Image (cartoon, rainbow, N blue to C red):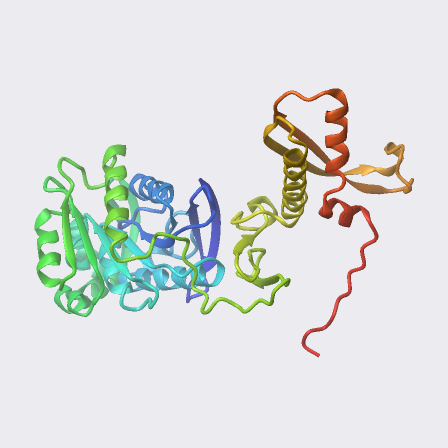
Length: 410
């Protein structure tokens, strides 16, 4: 799978660090946002495993560190449940701008409570899933109940949560009281899936019951039997991803890669249209009947969601070569099958090319290797290579080409 490190800015100007998991094809059927648990981070085992498993099912996932955690900027002591929700909105805006708007929200533990609130604010979201989530954000107070008074008196205090020392601020305590579950869920108006383990030692399964009772249909509950709160077993994370994908397919169109573009652009016969899909290198390629993407690799600043321009050029030459050879083989009744054409592009020193007119600097060289199954005579093999050079795209590339550029806005 294609995994990328990404960064984006939240509403307060902090840079947040994220990890984007994409399917092998680079073309996700839908995009999801994953919100991690309280004081955790994007790389907590549940988040990373579920994101990878969802990508394996064709759903791209962005997981990121909330403000003040992991690789993200900001002071955690100044954050709150409300700031987490705002960070989710910023992440959704980033996805919509650079890739696809998120259609699925997934939240683990307190992140589950956060996605229930954020789902109403992110218009593109069509379905929501929670994993081991409390019914209200105020539930997390039991983790630092013995220090709540100190936090209120001093404005902030260091606490120990799960063996990790963090500073919490008084704003967090007040903010946690502002989100009653009944009001949040009554206004959700989106399909909801609730995962919870009956033996969860950190968030009791009764919290899942409260969520289910407050939510309106369509809603579903799946029991994660014998799973711990953090889903540390690989099998539990895989089960969540597989069942989540099956459930989401009922509410999201996952048959083909989804784009948030409006109507398909009009393209005239014989014309090819290239449109911007993000502010980096992803481009939409359109003909009258077909569409696909071009992009650059991650190492060159792209998203790796399609072939780069030179790969498209080689594909064009290779496809034309293969078609031309098949037409010739059929016409001459040559006993060959499974024609394959492999192409490589590189820049070489002109002085190393004995039969090139250019003698200085570098030139472009395309190596084309043709293989097939079947026995041919030496003359037939030589003639097949000659035919390869006669394919129309080969003639275009090696002949005189005039490219006329016109200002379409004038």
